[in-house]
Length: 297
Image (cartoon, rainbow, N blue to C red; front, top):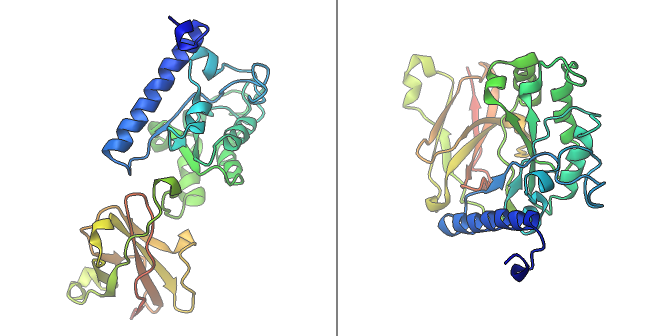
């Protein structure tokens, strides 16, 4: 039966079954909702170079052989939109060096997104590599140097909320101190939504004493069916409007029913410029609205 399908052994048959599951699931998701992003988080090693010349410089367990997961193929075939390899290893770890595996997955992304799985749960381990409490922050800095890597996913969420080794502090006050939009996936669509209109001061709410700062509102774009949320930017009076700098983002909302924002961080005596953009489900962003200039007294 295996030979009739062109499959030579039980291992290939198992991998073929997994491949077919991933393919069918991908097609079913896109048929139902084209905007849904489908990705998988495989074990950190596809195959070692000793097993396959296309493999990574590692010597650990192979997801291809031990788990029958040909994750590289899923990316190559375009069945998934992103890959999230579990690189829960430190720099220089001989069986599975973080830096070598990250570079390998980035080189094999085939234009799809790569989000590195990082082991926040290991931050307090008394083991080689993890005794360095800068291990995780340095991993984030390393991945940011690779243009083919779009970000991180951390395991587990409890490790972050418990602030193991102060890693949450590093994210909140240094590495992730600015809000940001998710990277767009051009193969899912790049059409920009219409921009918000009539950005202005919300004079009605100014009568509330606790809100006497910068309070703005705007109206729906003309083509509101494409709108999924809004992004509010703030610039200093003489600063050019540049949407590429995340430090200028004051607020991101992933809904289309709130049409206003109260800037509680605005300082009295200063003059600010505000613009608002629309985003769709894929996080494609519109052009900016009109500029609203506000001088706080």
